[in-house]
Structures are given as structure tokens and as C-alpha cells.
Image 1 (cartoon, rainbow over the protein chains, first blue to last red):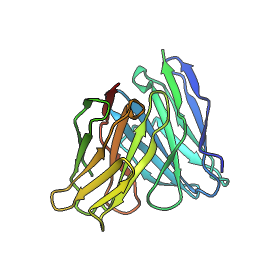
Image 2 (tube, rainbow over the protein chains, first blue to last red; image 1 turned 180 degrees about the vertical axis):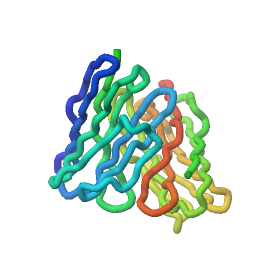
Image 3 (cartoon, rainbow over the protein chains, first blue to last red; image 1 turned 180 degrees about the horizontal axis):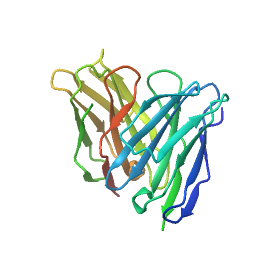
Image 4 (spheres, chains in turn yellow, orange; image 1 turned 60 degrees about the horizontal axis):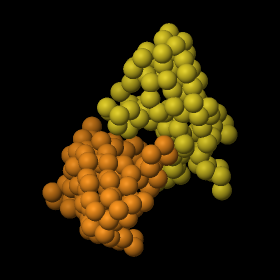
Length: 111
Length: 113
């Protein structure tokens, strides 16, 4: 089975711009979660989608949004980028309420 | 919400020594505790997990112990090797339904040859 994939792998944007990241889960996995990883804050949960519905949400501002398509692929959007949004964005997919499989991440740099 | 504390933040050992990383959590309803290993530039990968109905689980050189009363669980790596060098994260689920893990801040393990 192919693993979780994320595109693009690297991205450079400037403040004020918006960005869309994509995640394709493992086939058969309907849950996709997004995390932000930074050296200072570690791994922080953004949101989870299941069957095209947002099921859980972390403590991030409304500039961070997401969606899930009928094939379980998910996208995350960040609007009005700030310098502090520079991070590794990881998505993870799972079947049941336990083991998550992470993608390779998208490294976002905001200048 | 769940609060997960992980110690130490950095651990330096000699090859062949043992390494122990400890996490404490706050939600007594938590029942699934995974450990992830993240090598530099790579994705986190599950290395071992434990459920609350057991106190210990082993997989070759890696073991996890769980003390539900004290609300802590630990990762034990024996006979460490340089390839064990990585950042290790523990996680505990948030309360209130669907499993969403709260991660510890991570432990950078350095194994010196």
C-alpha cells in the first residue's frame, strides 16, 4: 500500500499571501488530521476530517482552514500568511481511533 | 484538554547503554499511548504503543511501561545504537470522544558510537 503523500514538499511564500497544501491518505483511511510542527511548540494539532466533515479542531485562528474530498484527500489552506506560520505541516491518516500514519510533510517558509 | 509532559528534552548516551524517556498525562480516561520516532528530515513513525489494559509491552530492544495510577508511561531502549539517534515523541489522547493525540514536546536522543 502506498503511504501518506503530501504536496508540495517545500514552499516559500511572503507575508500576506495564502497557501494551499494537499494530503492524500493511505487507501481506505477516511480520517485525515493536520499538524503544525515547529521547534518551539512541537507538534500541534490543527484539525481532523472524517468523511468530508471536520470532526475535531485545535486552537488555531480562523486563517487556518481545511476540507476533505469524497476520495478522502484533504487540503489545508492558510490565508494572510504571517512569519510565525513558517513550519513543517504534517498530515496523518488512520482507520480507527489509534495508530496514525504520517506523511512526509510540507515545509512552509514565510518571508 | 489533555496535558502531556515529556522528559528529558535531550538525552545523550553511549552506544550500548539504555535510554529511558518518560511522559506524564492528565486525563485519566486516556487509554492509548503511542511513541513516535522522527529522524532528522523525516516523518514521525510509530515505534511502539500500549493500551491501558496492559502494563508493559516489548518489541526487541524497545519497551513501553504504563502506570495508570500515576498517569505516566515510559519508553525504554536497551543496547542503544547510533541509528537510534532521533527525536522521540509520546502522545496521549484528548478526552471527549474521537482520538486526537496531544504530543509531548519531544526528546532528542543522541547515541554516541
